[in-house]
Length: 84
Ligand SMILES: [Zn+2]
Ligand SMILES: [Zn+2]
Image (cartoon, rainbow, N blue to C red):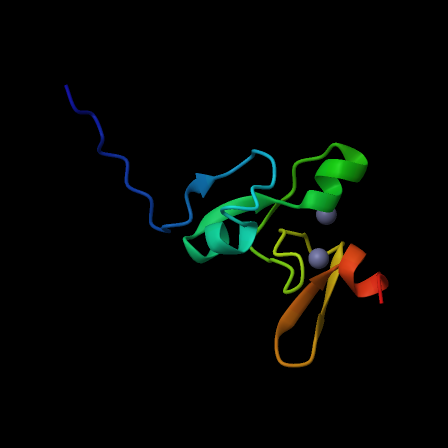
């Protein structure tokens, strides 16, 4: 019996909470409208902070606390913006 009457207004309803997959990067998932955990929160603080931002260098998701935007809308995570 199908009781699937609850409709989500946003298409952002999928959450990926697994590890980073280099064959299907966070960037690719975000482009498909899938929420990604901030990899820095996850690794450093064991916290799950969902984000729709990804790093232009390493393609991992990061939250607004753990990255920066530079230039023409490109975003870099804390690791990549410090690693220069
Ligand atoms: Zn974070
Ligand atoms: Zn990065």
